[in-house]
Image 1: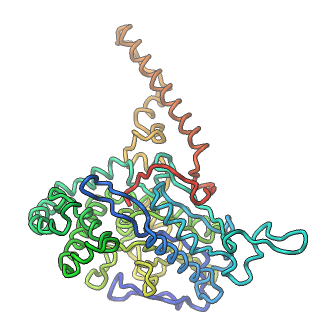
Image 2 (image 1 turned 180 degrees about the vertical axis):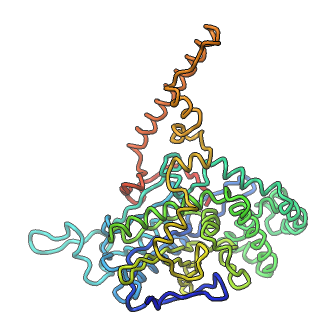
Image 3 (image 1 turned 30 degrees about the horizontal axis):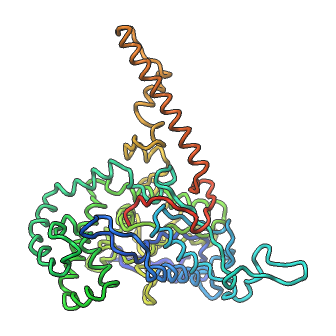
Length: 487
């Protein structure tokens, strides 16, 4: 009997903190984290602003990694994963980050906390391959036994990029999300809050324009308030007695961002979450089917994917008068965890959420996918989540109608139609000139397609990004390409 499983009777979605029963053990985990503190995205001169992870953000990411090191690797933890070594072993751990400076540096900070220098871990300094010398002594790596942990960089312009940012380069998602701007709800809020937003101008004058102060820019205004309340002493003093205004700015952004990324009447708004769910399944299945490595997977992403994933997991069905965790923007370096638990050879899944990195922040557990228990049989989890997930590239291309992406062209209706006819078309009713024109056009199309696929293959073979199926790793800090995801 699983006495560790807790049923949320009467209050579906109420956060719980169960402990493992004596006959239970965690055998694997997937951790999905939000990036940590960074500088503002929006200014009067640019809607992009700067995207730089701050020292505060580095500490947040580090503390998150340290928390999970203590939880899953410490000998004193009841959640320890047996077999997961505190010395980094590439086959035991996978990490992934999209090609964004903020996301990659968040991953670096997390990995530094998860795998600290070996001199800080008793009895571990001599466990690194090649550390023993012929004279019987041991030599440690620089910086007190620093562990060089690898992560996979996911380039948004390659097939791998869809897994962590499945809403990027996806026209169907973009159209579904933008439809909110034409809704009665948006127009009502945009009108009713206009005077409130304009009243904020004295607080942001010189940084944001009046044209930027409206509900249609709810996230940008909130982001400016949030970042400058931490990093700008003058602004922090200005809003010291403006707690009601700051609260209203955050509340309106919560409504705005959730509406863009989850609409129960149009689930195309959750394509990024559906794709992330497919990635979670793939990684957990590696652990479940092999029974061991990788014991742990970590991925870092942006707030929009969290909103979408919460919708896929049915977390918006919680009693929101009890817990509003999922309806508002989550804190920096917050993390969602999927724990694979074993008891009497039965596998269960448990979903938990840690909303931040303060000492008081702990993992709270929630029922998902319509369950009323915080534990779900793994087979049920796979079956139910698969129904709501995008699990392969072809499905993503078709769902998004992303035919402008080189790696989707082979799945496009035009290509499939041409392939069905062996790239031959009837010209019996055409003039010689017309037939010749079509023939030349088809030839050019096929040649262009072949060249595009060849280029993609060549580029892919040289890219530091890697396939999730083979999961090779990229050295921390070595991935450098233009950011393509909102963070």
